[in-house]
Amino acid sequence: MLSKKTVLKIKNLLSEDKLTQAEIAKQFKISRSLVSDIATGRSYGKVEGPEAPVKAPKGQRKKSTANPEEKILDLEAETVHLREELRLAKRQLLGAVKTRGLFTAMADELHSTIKPIKALPSARPKIKSAAVTEHLVMHLSDGHHDQVVTPDECGGLEQYDFKVSMCRAENYIDTVLKWTQETLAPKFNFPSLTILAYGDHTSGEIHGHANRSYFRNQMKSCLAIGQLHSLMFRDLAPYFETVNIVYVPGNHGRRSLTKDYHGAHDNWDYLLAKTAELYCADIENVHFTIPNAFSANLDIGGIGFSVFHGDDIRSSLGIPWYGLERRTGRIKSQADHGLSISRPGTSTARAPPP
Image (cartoon, rainbow, N blue to C red):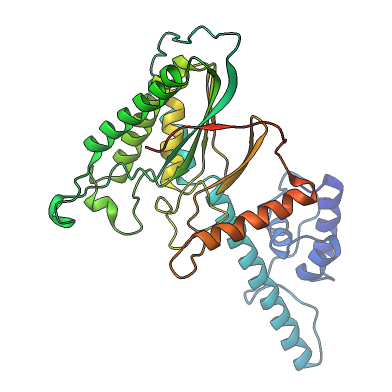
């Protein structure tokens, strides 16, 4: 944003017609296109000042030079400068699209269409004084809830679709509640539940899955999966004081051909996470964290967690263990340099896998 005084100086230089627009831009450390906009009145038109001379039919008026080679060099320099400005503008536009992109706009629109579900009454058990307090961590990942697998595709070993996925989700919740509220309840107390959602909740579009999915429509898939997740969170909420949910995107939900680390929210996993958040808006003890990143570092009961989908971990001889070992080593190295978020002396209980 230029001051009125600066704009007036630029207009005075333009009216004198002694310097080119490129030279004026360099003097004030602004783009040549902005100088052109000031000259034509497209920018800062309300600032009164002398009018700039009209451009000649062949372009901007330049200082005459007796040497044709110098004139050619000036024109080439101007062309290079304009190309650099164009590339910069395109990069800025691309970044703005990723930040304020399609999914962000759709998530904003969902506020007016999604009606939050009602919270269930509290079912917190009475805590015995001798009970050990622990923090419960659940894992929710790679559901591919909208994928369809028929028996003839896998020798009769499997059958899967959205209805089967809903049954598995219900069984997962029932198992966790039975494990925490009955099996371990006499000796353990779980006031806090953290759900780590690692992504790939939908099969996405990157391999043409949308046309073969249960809903045959990616938008419908995200809305349905987001609602399914919200019902899972609603059923868990009465048994815990706090339910914290962390969503990071996977690789199947991305919309770019390759993984774009500057476009974490340009992902169907982000949209279904926002859908779940909107459905749970009236459940006071359910809290969502949806970072614009492919990973998140958390402190859960004094234990450090680095949460990411894991698609970028390279395998060695087809075994991912060595890639995980290398990643763990890098994270520990960062912790040794003062980035640790864990505190010794505490433990974390984990729910069984689905």
